[in-house]
Amino acid sequence: MSEPRPEQLIEAVLLVSPRPIGNADLRSATGLSEDQTSAALVTLLERYSPRTSGIVLREVAGGYLLSTNPSCSAAVERFREEARPAPLSGAAHEALACVLYLGPLTRAGISRVRGVNSDAVVRNLIERGLLAEVGADREAPGSPALLAVTDEFLAATGASSTADFPALEELVSPEELARVRDRLLTTTGSGEPPPAEGPSYEGSPY
Image (cartoon, rainbow, N blue to C red; front, side, top):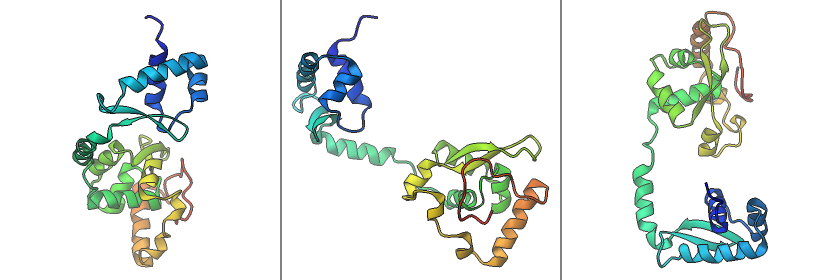
């Protein structure tokens, strides 16, 4: 492959940056001189002109940023609405609550606590990045994977950690909590809850 041109190098760096990049940082990333960087930016400003492109190169906050052309905002918003994932079902919320307060849990543990098979629900939550494998239950046959809520889940709920959620004792009665614990212990076939491999769950009763 031929050596990339200066404007190609800068274009690639701008494409992967979510925030404006200053001239000095562009030079540091690309290894270009100040003159090369300035000339490349002139080329890119013309290439990504609002007059001719759906993507524009903006000078903002002391740096440069690639963004969509404001004149195309209606189409972009329609796409965002169409591409937005369907709202979570009640079953999905239940599964997330199980893992949030009692996790990490295996798939079987989630199903036992909910009282119904939850494999399809859990698979969907993993695909959406809200649950992830964080270890394995070594005491259970086959060492099934343990699942925990993800950073994406915390970001979507506006929480900084699992400790930001109300304590489980504030949400359910002692009798219901005892029934949930019994279901969970039955899942493991032992007198102990699943081993808590992975993230810490401050505020959880387990």
